[in-house]
Amino acid sequence: MGVSEAVAAAHPNIALIKYWGDRDHALRIPANGSISLTLGGLKTQTRVGFDPELKQDRLTINQAPGEATARQRVTEHLDLIRVMAGIQFGAIVDSETDFPIGAGLASSAAAFAALTLAGCAAAGLELGRSELSALARRGSGSAARSIFGGFVELVAGDDDSATFAKPLATAEHWPIVDLIVLTDPMPKPISSTAGHSRAETSPLQAARVSDAPRRLQACREAVLARDFGRLAEVVEQDSDMLHAVMMTSKPALHYWQPGSLAVMAEVRTLRAQGIAACYTVDAGPNVHCLCLPETEPSLRQGLARLPFDLRILRAVPGPGAWLV
Ligand code: PMV
Image (cartoon, rainbow, N blue to C red):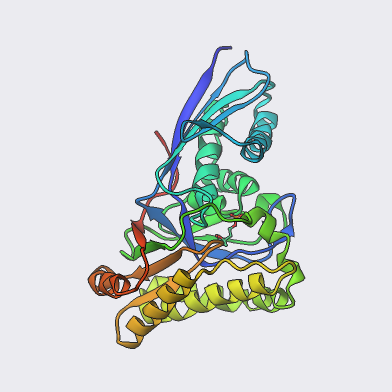
């Protein structure tokens, strides 16, 4: 057998209702369900080539050799695929990402969704989307959601095979715009993988998890009814609850920067003036500002008034991971 290779691409996603903490860390079974929007406009493309000549995997990320932790995570993920496919040799993995990685922009979601799809195709495995999602989840919990497009829910199942994402509404259902304000595009100091294991050290995590079904239901209803006001309320509350848990864990995790707070305050001011906009922040300082196409100009004007040097990326609902 010679080299067998495949190329896949995936968008990252922004969690509207966030996953934080695991019921099972090794299997990455999340403590609570989550809902996200797949972000067309940002992309990771990955080539996987299994080669009988290789004893070890070789990884490049944006044309540079992958660092030890990234290499280990990729190898562990490919091991799952190798076991399923009965492959006993290494692979060449080349990954290209067109947005800042490791900055709380869910680069791992796009990376592991693309790696899972390309890896399975190169290994000759024919898996359905649910199985691909469960497998992507093992690399990064949020990657389970990037297998699908549009609005996506990751259900916190009881075991590995029951914990996968499913579509909630298509990308065409609601043309939400995400202006991602980069307050600090430097790699974050603590990865979300390390962060998840700290969640239980916060006395607020139990309350956040037990209230999750209510937030998930409010979010589902708001998305399906295209009710921006209702979405804004639950999305901001969920984001603030996540950061309350992070800030009160041991050791504490503080991802917000002065620029993040200024952006969040501006978004709240705009909404009080009747402009459809809301914020949400993942495990990093950058702020995702959600709005509607008709309120994007007002949101941009408001952000431009802030006394910070802010870079803005734009995303709109996009498709699930695809083979190139
Ligand atoms: O998939 P991970 O391990 O990078 O965790 C994602 C954590 C958050 O982005 C904060 C929330 C989420 O649901 O995406």
